[in-house]
Length: 380
Image (cartoon, rainbow, N blue to C red):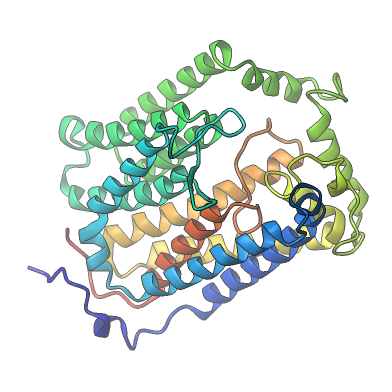
C-alpha cells in the first residue's frame, strides 16, 4: 500500500514544464495590467481609491501563486488521498452561503462569504473540488465504468448536488457551467453514451424550464440575444456597449489606460466585460495575443492529459482542469462578442474576483505537478 503522508523529498528533482509556467505568468501579468486599467475609474468613484480593486487582486494573486507552488510540489498520491476531504470542505463552504450572517445577499444573490471585509466565492472552489473528485472516482472505478447503479448514478448525484446549490445561490450561469464541465469529464471517461445522452437531455430540458418559469431576466437575455438592437437603452445596452468597445479598438487599440468605454459606458468593465476593455485598448493585436495565450495553455494542458504518466487519474485531472479554464475563457469572450447570450462567467486571470484568480492558479499548480515525469498509475 502506498504511503499517504506528504514527503516533500519525493517531489524534488522533477523539473516543471517551463513553457506552461511561462504561459501562466504571462496570462496573470497581462490580466493584472488590464484589470488595473479597467478598474481605476470605478475604484476611484466608488471607494475614492484608484487602487482598491487591483490591490485586492494582487493579494489574491500572491496567495494563489504561493498555493500553486506548494500544490505543484506535493506528491500526487497525497492529493489523491485527501480529495474526498477537499470535496467535503467545498460542500461545507457552499452550505455556508445560505447563512445570512456569513453570506449577506449582494446584488440579489448569495454567492459570497464575507470575512474581514474580503469576499470568497465557494462556487469557484467547488469547480476545483469536483474536477479532483471526478478524476479520483473515475480512476478508482476504472473497471466498473459501465455500472449504472454503483458508478454513474453516485457521480451524477454529487454533480447535481453542487449544481443545485450553485443555482440556489442565484448563479444560473455558473451552475450550468459546473454541470457541463462534469458531463465533459464523464464523456471522456467513456461512460456509456446512453447514460451521457440521458443526462445531457435532462440538462437541456431542465435549463429550458428554469429559463421559462424562474427569474425573468434570464429569459430576457435569450430574447435580447435573438433580437439584438431592439432595446438599445435597456436590455441590449451592455452587449452593444461591449461591441462598440471591440470595434473602437481597431487593429492597434487606443493604448493601455486610454480606453473610454470603461468610464461608465460599459457596465461591469472590470469584471464580466473586461475583455471588451482589452479589445478597445490593445486592439485586434492584443485580442489575438490573449486568445493565443489561452489556446497555448489549453494545448499544453491537453498534451499533459494525453501523455500523463499517472494513468487515468492524471488524464482525467489534467483534462478537467484545462477544460474548466478554456471553457470559461471562450464563453466569456463569446458573450462580449455577442456570439452567445450574456452570462456571469468571468474571464480567467483577467476579471476582478480574487477567488476566481486564486482557484485558477491552484488549477495551474496541479497542471505543473502533472507535467512532471510520472511515477506510474496512482491508486486511491
